[in-house]
Length: 228
Image 1 (cartoon, rainbow, N blue to C red):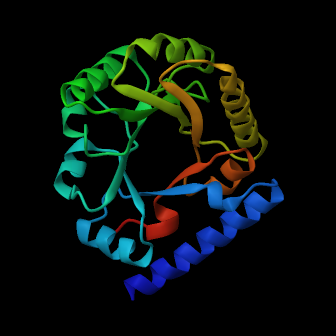
Image 2 (cartoon, rainbow, N blue to C red; image 1 turned 135 degrees about the horizontal axis):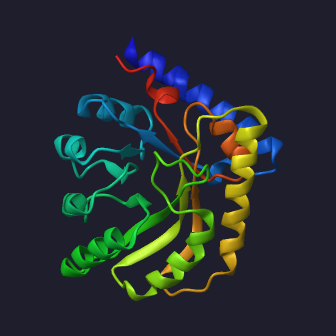
C-alpha cells in the first residue's frame, strides 16, 4: 500500500538524519524537514500529513501551489520566484526560501505592508557559482541583508542554497563554504534579520547537509518515492 511505503520512507529518513546528526554532535530534533511536494496531489499531501502531523510542504511552482493550496496545511515556497507571482503567496506560506534580488524583496515588502503582514524569507545563495541557478554570490549576502533593513514588511530568517550536481569531496567543499558563510552572518546586526535557518540538503545529499550544519532539509523523493 502507498501508506506503507511512506511509513518506511519516513522511518529511513528519520534514522539517517539521526545518524548524521549524532556523527556531527548535533541534536536531530532541531532539524526541520520540508516535504518537497512538486507534482504530488493534494490528496497525497493530506494522507502524508495524517502519517506525519504538522508536516510542512514545499512548493516550487506558483501555479501548482495555487491549485493545491488549502489553509489547513503548512506551506513554504522553495522555488525560483518571479516578482509578478508574489501576490499569490503573501499570507499563505510560512516562509519564502528563494529571495535573491532587490526587486523581489521590494515586492514582498510592499504586498506584506499592504496587508499588514510580516513575511518571513530566506536569502538564496549560489554556492556553486552556477549560471543556471539563482542566488547571490556568497560575497554579496551580508551587504544584501544590511541593505534590506529598510523593508519593514520582511523578516530575513537565514539563508538557503541548492547545491551543484557534484559528489564526494567537491560536495563537501560546497557545504563547508556554505556553513562558513552562515556562521559569519551571526555577526550581522539588523532589525529585521535573525540568523536562524540554514536551508540546504535534498534527497540525494541530505546526510551531508546535516553533517555540515543544515537545520532545514527539503526532501521529495526520499519521502514520497519516485515521481510517477
